[in-house]
Amino acid sequence: MAVEKEKVTMLHGAGGLVMHNFVKEHVVKSFGDLALSAEVPLEAMDDAAVVGDIVFKSDSHAVKPIFFPGGDIGRLSVSGTVNDISALGAEPYALALGLILEEGLPLDDLDHILDSMRQTLIEAGVSIVTGDTKVVEKGNLAGCVMNVSGIGKRSAALENNLQIVKQYRPNFSARWTLDSNLAVGDKIILSGTIGDHGLAVLSAQRGLNFGSNIVSDVKPLNKVIQRVMCEIGGVVTMKDPTRGGLADVLNEFSEKSQIGILLQEDKIPIRKDVAVACEMLGLDPLEIGNEGKMLFGVVPQKAEEALTFLTQTGEGKNAQIIGEVTDAFKGVAMQTIVGGKRIIARPIGDPVPRIC
Ligand code: MG
Image (cartoon, rainbow, N blue to C red; front, side, top):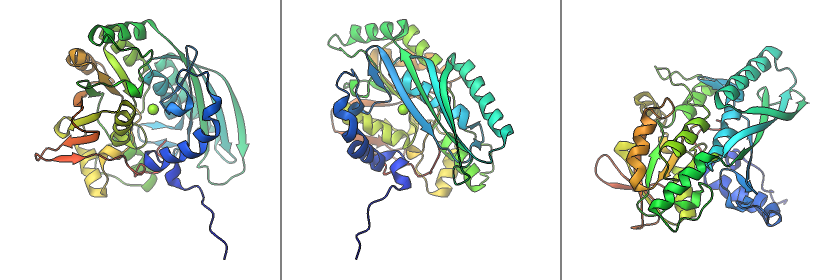
């Protein structure tokens, strides 16, 4: 009898533990040792790589459907790459677009997507400078998939930010806002409500109506990030809670910084309709992907100031300090509203497929 060979499954692309291990054991294993010159190399598995003083990122999008409440694959692709470059503290400035179109995609739809990308690029203040187009036979692409790669550079805002971190933590030596930078006492700030993107795409996939208007939060965050670093400072790390949601990203912080994170459930911003829809569907909002939110790790002395600043911006108006870094335990735990403590494990994968 033939032994069934292991095959790629949807979970391999769903964020979370299965994808993390898959990327480590297959992709990083193949190339990790070749990237010796990178300051932040492939095996760091951070939001982007650092080569010299350039931050470099590539991100593909295969969201299904390509139009969803609050956004589309074009806005998602630009925002995803811009936000990942920004998460390292860099200022994104040039992008490349790889378009893979499915035969039969209406040209009107494509133009709509390109126009949406153009608007997002203007919002972010970046441009697409090169790219490539391919067409594949009609199949199961849902219209198109795309890759946006990009580069970012150091900025005065980042230098100012790191100087302020060093005022409070003299031994801080990182040149970028990496996942591994957290220390005991740092506060975790979340820039807004969770679950909006995942549920907006899910509603479009399944034709569900949650009795309200849940729209994706997809947006570029580079400008607000540069402003926080320039005007407040003290940010040691950032990460956007995309696939796998807060649960995945916080566990990544915890592993790479070798610290514990204690969350306060009552501080985690979530729209009432999103919470109700999650409960109806049996989904954990902590594991659902977002596309317009950022987690900031901030030195305690600057956390309140950073929060006040964020709440005065459009991107961060619902921001909250949701937790704190501790050495009392490793991993992530949450003080629940009812009074207990719950372990927040790394999810196996995002419960909603093809959200990005
Ligand atoms: Mg990211």
